[in-house]
Amino acid sequence: MFCAGVSPRPKDKPFAMQCRGVVYKVSCIDCNFRYYGQTDRALETRLNEHKRAVQVGDSNSKIAQHANRFVCSIDFNHATIETTRQETKTLTS
Image (cartoon, rainbow, N blue to C red; front, side, top):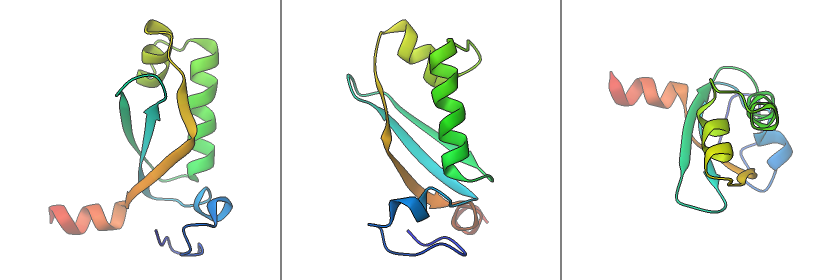
């Protein structure tokens, strides 16, 4: 997926992880749970926050609640960019 200032080639995951202004999806390895989020910061930064929330059992985090309640593993390594915030604005305008 193309993001401003980021390589459009999907195989370039390090570049995609620096995307800002995206809607992203994170899935559970053990069940059908999917979390959709949006961030204006780099995707990598937001995913690291989610990882920390799971590690410390943050009760304010939906991902951490799921992982800890159901003893599931969240697949942060395969998070996907669903759309950019700009595309979302266009769809809802």
